[in-house]
Each structure stands twice: as C-alpha cells, then as structure tokens.
Image (tube, rainbow, N blue to C red; front, side, top):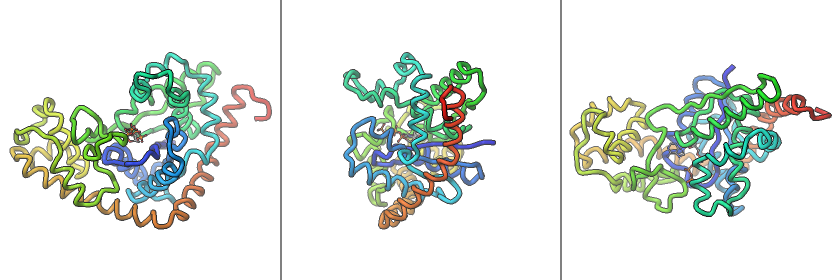
Length: 333
Ligand code: AQP
C-alpha cells in the first residue's frame, strides 16, 4: 500500500518555494486519500546551529504553515521529528550502512559546508542518513519534494538496496521520489540562477508565507526580469530564467499548465503580467498567512496536535525499528 512521507526544516522564513515545491503537493496527496506522514525535521535543523527560542518558534510556526496550507492533522500525521526517537535509532543503523564516499558526493553538504568543510558538524555530513531513516522507518513508498532533494532521495534508495543486500532481505522498499509540477524549483526573485531559499540574506529574493498582501505585491513588482514581453510558447523561456520563473510560479499557483499561462498572457509586457501574478499570489497566499497568525495565537493547541501526531507516528515506526533490530541481530528485539 502506498504511504507518503515528507519533511520540512523548521529554520524560519517558510517561502513560496517550500509552498509550491512541497506543502501544496502534500495537500494534494492527502486529498487523494493516500496515507500521509509530514514531519517538522527539527533534528535536521540543528545540523547548523539554531538559537533555541527561534527553533521552538519556527517549529510551531511551520506546523501552523502546514495546517493553514490545508494539512488536516486528523487525516494526515503531523509531528516533529525529535518526539519520535525511532528516527535517530534508525539513523544510527543507516550510518553503518551508508559509505563515507556516498556522503562526500552530496552537493547540499558541499554547498552548506562551504570552503571550510573540516569545521562543518558531523550531523551535517550525516544528514542524508537521518533523512533515509525518516522515510524508511515508515516504509514510505512516495516522497514528494522539490528538485533540490533528488540526490538525497537517490541516496535513500542506495541505503535501502545495500541494507536489503547485506542482510539478504527485501525488508525496505525502494522509495520513489515524486518531483512533479511546474514549481519543483522556484528561483530567487532577484537572481534566476539561484533557488528561492530560506537562508538568502535578501528578503526581496523570496515571498514568505507570513508576508502580507502589500509585501507580496511589492516583491513581485520589483522581481528581476528582462525587457522583452512574454513569449506565446515555451521554447524561448529556456534562455530567460527570470521570465520562466514567474511563469512557472503563475502556473503552479493557478493549477494551470505553462502552455495555458502563455496562451493567456503571451505578448504581454511584465508591467501587465506582474500585477496579474501579484493578484493571484495574494489571492492564494493571504488566507494562509492570516490562518497561520490565528493558529499561532494558541501554541498549546499546536503542541497538542504535534504530540498526538508523534504518538500515532510511533505506532508505525516502533515495529519497523524492532523488525530492523531483529534482522541485524540485536538481542531483545
Ligand atoms: N526553491 C524551492 N523550490 C521548490 N521546492 C523547494 N524546497 C525548498 N526550496 C525550494 C522544498 O521544500 C521542502 C522543504 O525544504 P527544507 O526546509 O527541508 O529545505 P531547505 O533546502 O532547507 O530549504 P531552503 O529554503 O533552501 O533552506 P536553506 O536556505 O537553508 O537551504 C523540500 O521538499 C524542498 O525540496
């Protein structure tokens, strides 16, 4: 039976890329009636130092973001990673399955560690093994993510295959990454060659889910573009990354294909397309931002939802961890 798992780091500045690449698609899988598990991966967040109060706030705000986007915590399981110890227990097993050489190839580690890799945390290096544990401790079959997570998911598959091979079993499924739609890689509004990111120092580079309507409209108005009007066909967008990004965002927000957007807006200058995009973005995002603020007024309710989700998640994870321990020869399992 199919089971969806995905996670988001509670590192603040939840943005349009996270919404279109992840949250919105999580809601789609929930609505299709697939058993879905969504996690605030707080243990992943601390691979880079976090101010404790900020982390606590960001975790609750992310939970509010999930719920405001349409995740129903009675239909899906919504929880934070540190409340389900089976994730780190499974991660240790996978640390022993994964190879140093596999980890060294990870582009996210190289990007995040920068030039001074010797000074990066061991956790940042092992990040993909914990991610494999997040997924496989539920025997998840499908993982909806943005394009940037493709390499980590391939590593999850490698870990599952090597475990199955080393212990002569078929215990772990080979999980399928689901990277689909018009917005699997939303780019920065200031630079069409960089992905929209939580950690970009320029707030103008991204639309935050907490931005109000005026801020959203201003950021879109100021987004970098070229002077040409929009083309009527897809081809010419290949050489126009900023234009392509805005068209992709429009298509994803409107649930339209790129071709449909260009059929409607081809030939228009950005002075006309940007206000249309701003109206659409405000229409889709303002209710989410309003609902997030409302939910954040009572964090005890959010904490209750996360604790309940963690208890339900453990019911699935605990027997899978026990079976893993049995397979590898742990007495008592
Ligand atoms: N720009 C993006 N376009 C589409 N999808 C994106 N995702 C992230 N950025 C984009 C997807 O959002 C999910 C959660 O991301 P995360 O919080 O685990 O990843 P992240 O890489 O930390 O997010 P950021 O914004 O890029 O943060 P920094 O700046 O710290 O690197 C994932 O499914 C991801 O693919």
